[in-house]
Amino acid sequence: MTTLLADGQGTGATEAIEVIEVIEAAPPEQRALGRLRWAEARAAVLAGRLDRAGSIIHGGIVVADLREGELALEDLWFDYQAALRAATPGRPVDDELRAQVRATVPVPRDLDFRMSSLAACVADTDGSDG
Image (cartoon, rainbow, N blue to C red; front, top):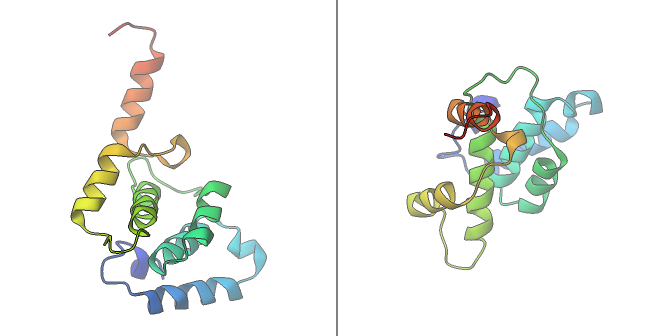
């Protein structure tokens, strides 16, 4: 399931809906796991269920074993934001829109595990002026 959702490219709404259905059938304690919450949000974005995706994203996704530098949550955020902007009739989610979103929409701190953002946080807190 995670492989199906990993890059979102070529994953159709039908497959995403199937992933959502599998997750909905899981016991609540499994559905609360961070990786499953991520998969559900990712599938919701791919299926065009942006209210559902937003609810999960804004409700918080904590992936206990997420490695520093892993981009799964960041990519989810940017794909969600691009899909929101594409909700305007006639606006496709394409490389141009993805690039625009990445350049203009900051990643919330709780979703940002990029190495560069960690370096920036250290620089902001080291007490130096530059």
